[in-house]
Amino acid sequence: MQQLSPADLRVLMIEPSAMQRRWITNELTESGIHMIDNATNEHEALDYLARCAPDLVISSLYLPDGTATDLLAKIRANPRQETLPFILISSESKREQLEVFKQSGVVAILPKPFSQDQLLVAITSTIDILSEDELDLELYDVDTLRVLVVDDSKLARKIITRVLGNLGIQHIDQAEDGAQAINLLKEREFDLIVTDYNMPEVNGVELAEHVRDSETHSHIPVLMVTSEANDAHLSHVAQSGVNAITNKPFEPNTVKQLLASILDGR
Image (tube, rainbow, N blue to C red; front, side, top):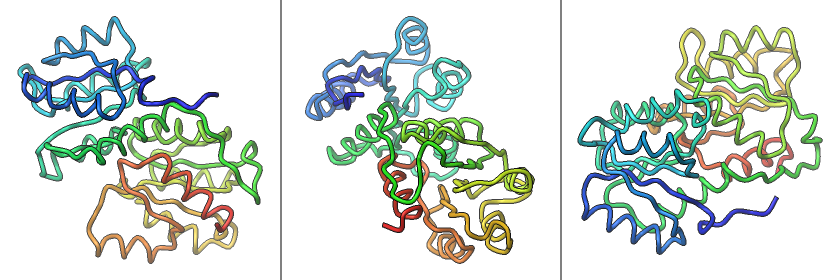
């Protein structure tokens, strides 16, 4: 499959401010994106999405008839669009306001204003999500690699599963939380666990500790995906026995590099 470029992407931009639309359009054009359609509110955006299939949605947080939170929920409720790449642009800094986007599998959350470098990273992540690029491993046959994805967000599981599938991984099981994952570990064998941190009943740290304390499963590498940024929290996660930690939202290429590192020891 030929690698996509920014010029191949069709973008739906949702921004009520004409001045902001001009600025974002200019930034997108400078990054190589030229197929840009516009909507100024949620109604226009949903009408567009009912007729067209963009490769990427970029939206401001606050819209005249709702918020990007509501819009994203409606997009994710459509089976045809549940993994559609979505970038949020917002000056909002409150963690609770942004957490829903992190848990919904957005490609990136860009500040307002954002830099060209920040935009390019987000566009590269979008291309990685849309493209197939098989993982090259020395110690494993990627076609037979068995992966367990653990996340209480169905949407986040779907995004992670899509990224892993694009890397050539075919055997992927899913668990809604650590408790369900522990039950699956009793029934099946896995070569890798990719888990969220914040989950009910048994969280990601507790799951990692269970794996490390198990005579049967202690060898399984664990990749932790977390939206937490607190240093004390990350130190606690590291002490639980995880092999690598990545942020949510994550960059697919970063996940690929981490997988090659923890599976092949690169």
